Length: 471
Ligand SMILES: Cc1ncc(COP(=O)(O)O)c(C=O)c1O
Image (cartoon, rainbow, N blue to C red; front, side):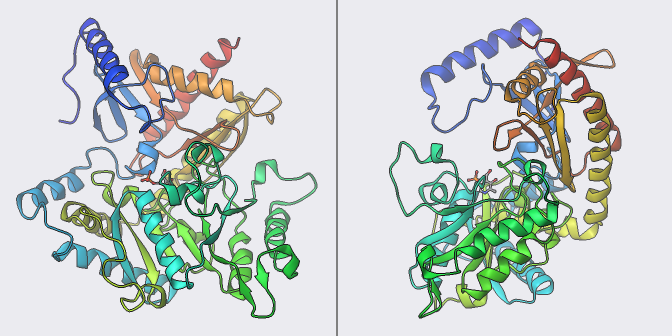
C-alpha cells in the first residue's frame, strides 16, 4: 500500500522537525523552490492523494506539475516498472533494447497519422535536457542559426540553453549568458486582453505583432534579398503551463505558423507539461490545427516514475546523415525502465477513450469552478481545456491580481487541517501566471466525479478561510 504508516501527531512533528533541521544544514536550496515555509514533507501517495507523515490525505490538484497524469501508484504502470526491474532493468544507451524501439515506432507512427510527416524519436532524461537536445537539432538543421523566438510567459526549463528561451530573467540573472536569449513575443491572454477586442481579434492582433517583424528588413529579423530569417525556430507551449494555463484563441497558432512557413522558421512544440492527454488530446497542439516540425515531451510519459523524456522531429531534420550518432548522448538516455513505462502509457491510453473521458471530467470541473466564482468575486477568471484548468485569484473587483490571497490559500491547503466530513484533509495547489495569482489545476486524469466535487467544496472552504484571515 502506498500510504505511509501513520505516526502519532507528536512523533510526526518531532520527526518532521529533525528532517527540516537536517535539510537546512545539508541540502542545497538551489535545486528546489521552497514555495512554502516550512517546506512540506510527504511520505506516501495513491490515486489523487498524497499523505503527510501523520497519514493526513491531501487531494492533489497539481499532480507533480502534470507528471503524474495517471494517478499516483497507478497499479498497471507500477507493475510494468516492477516487471522491467525483473527482466532488463539497465543497459548502456549504446545498446538497443526492445521497448526503446517499440516506443519510438509508436510515437512516430502516431505523428505520421496525425500530421502526415515521417519522423524519428530521440530520447534523453528530463524535460530541460530534451529542450537542450532540440536546440542542438534545430541549430544543426538550420546551418547553425542560434537565435530563437519564444513567448512572454513561456517556460522551457532551467538548464542554460532552456533558460535562454524561457521568458523570466530571474532564471538567468546570476549566471551570465550561454547562448543568445530568445526574442519573446506576446502570447494572447484572453482574460486580460485590451478593451474592445474579441478573443479572436486579440489572437489576430498578436499574430500581426509577430508578422510585423517581417514587413521590412529594418525590423531586424529578416533579409529580403535572400528571404532568410535570422531566427531558427519558434518555441511554443500550446497552452502556457507556468504562464498560468492560458488557453489561446483557436485560430492563433494557425496565424503564427503561416508566418513561420513563409520565412522558413521551424515550429518547436513543447508538450512537456500539456502532453499525454492533459488537455484531452495526446498532444495539446492537436487542438490548434498546425503541424509541428519538432515536438518535445517528458513528465507524464512515464507517469513520473522515471525521468525519461524525448523529442520527435521531421525526418528532414533528424535523419542520421544530418544528426549523426553521438549528436547528444547521456548515460541514462532511453533507459529501459523509462521506455517500458512510456510504451505502457501509450498502450493504456489507446485502449480507452481518454479524449472523451478527459473532456467530460474537465467540463465537470470547470462547471464547479464557475459555480464557485458566483460565490467568490475574487475568482476573476476560470477557463481550461480538458483537465488543464485555471482559476485567477483577484481582489474583490474580480480583476486586480491578488497574489497574497492565493499564497494564503496554498498555505492553508498545505497545513492539512481542512475539514472533510469530520476528518482532517489537505489540498495541494500550484501557483502560476504572469502575476503569480493563478491556481493552475492539473488533477489526475483518473480523478473521480466525487473527488471533483470534493475539490470544489475544499476550494470553497479554503477561499473562505483565506479571505477571513486577510490582513
Ligand atoms: C512546458 C515545460 N517545458 C519544460 C520544462 C522543464 O522540464 P524539467 O523540469 O523536467 O526539466 C517544464 C517543467 O515544468 C515545462 O512545464
